[in-house]
Image (cartoon, rainbow, N blue to C red; front, side):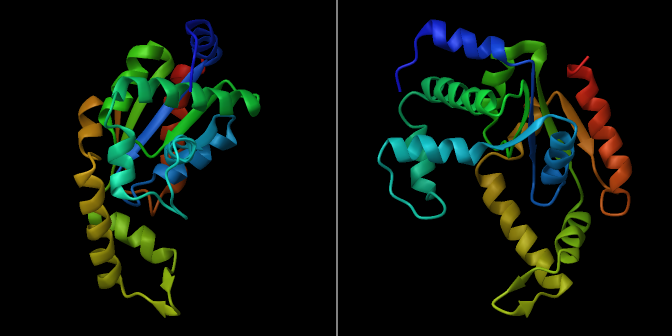
Length: 208
């Protein structure tokens, strides 16, 4: 995709506020994104933009790109890929007629750093922490069913650990190091309203 400097600056100036949401499985990223969406901050998925970029480059996949696809996408010139990612992201914001967005799920710390450098105070990287037991409990309460089988809590814990390993391998914990805000979400399952109040308070900082 060829992007002129004039086009890029116009999209950069279009953004009034952006939040990235990072953290391990079932920490509360989606709940935060849904709540932000409810107050006018559009919820967007990082992987959807990446898929569009891959398809335009001729990558072949059905539902989810392979690990090699992600590696190949960022292999050549990471800064140029970040630039294109941002340009496409803001294009989707323009289509939706919104100036604020949250992006899930940030596993690539370098992207968070790039967006912060680009947008300055308009950008906030948020990392959400929650203990394994809390995260597994949230998954268990969803009554996860696979092939007609309902999983036990112990099985859910094992599944959550497996998801964590994949995300950690791809840099999820490194996002904590570049986060502007770290939320301790240890009571999220029991007190979602309080969690939403925290998210709303954070959002108000950029939306002033």
